[in-house]
Length: 323
Image: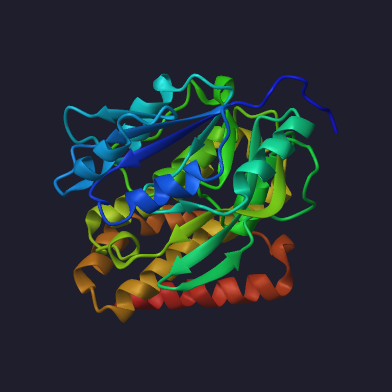
């Protein structure tokens, strides 16, 4: 491991929108841990609840900078607006209804001090009510620098289904020219795809960094055209934007196509279970040809059992869409 001699400095960027009930807990969880080498920048994205009144209690705090957005831009737009305000070596995006897990800051600083890396990731706790469950967010060996040749980063993301932005810390100089796609849901999936093309190396630590609050309003989405377009569009974006790289690794190309078609088949089944016949027709008209092509590119190299299961899902999907 390569040790860094200079202190590790981190800018913690927090978008806020209508989270008056949670933002104080979020900020206090961070303030309880950070040292003088961290800054917190909070942007209120034109909240319509009492969020700004809660934030004003922190106006004079020396470690916190509060910013009022002139109009609502959404999560991606607020993250994009926050990034140019950061001044430190590393950036950590934290959502305002979550909390920094106890002890996470010290773990992150120690890891970054011992490894000169473009990105550090960690695990998280799924938090619902009074219950917290540990969630693994990477595959492989912890505390080891991994070079991002041969698509190693996106392989890890795809295998673990961990597209989260908030359980990762990024070198600011590396991400300054990539942004979040505004106006889209599932912005983290798009961002991880773009990130995979710019980072040179990365590492994970086997410790939870975030307590991720699973609240009803944030995890239940209406399965409308916007949801479908952005959800399926995110995975088609990944396949398309990694196309040139995938040619050099047909085995991973096969696996990515397998995972991508599984997402599509899962959504078709969910729409059927919800009896959303109009959305099934929308899928059939706008996406089925694209995902059927992805399915037909998948070879049996994914393994016989996987291939048989996928073939069953494909037949099931085609049956649902033909009704």
